[in-house]
Image (spheres, rainbow, N blue to C red):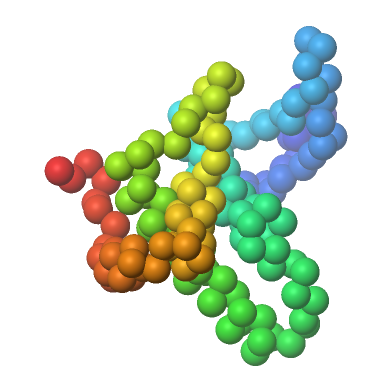
Length: 149
């Protein structure tokens, strides 16, 4: 390993390959000087950010389709998309506490909390306008602090 990574400075990264075949399984290999626990914590934070960007881009709000390159327009658009995303997440978290999303056989939920909230908001706007004031009030309340009762 020293011949491949011995000359790296602190904070530098080197990739051997995007993916490796290890014991018949294709995976991405991470080599780091962090402890295993710190690496898992960092990867978990990174994965959360990746999922957020994926829902803002291709899987959700389709931000990439906009096509503008003007920084002022992109800044405003990104701000509006983030507000919409957070409002969908807020409704999804609230709804999850009342009627949890179904868990599929593989152990993952059938949809994300953002999608769950977005569907509820769309349903209220289209078919159930009396629910809309309650959702608007919900959006003005902050998220609960994790671990608080």
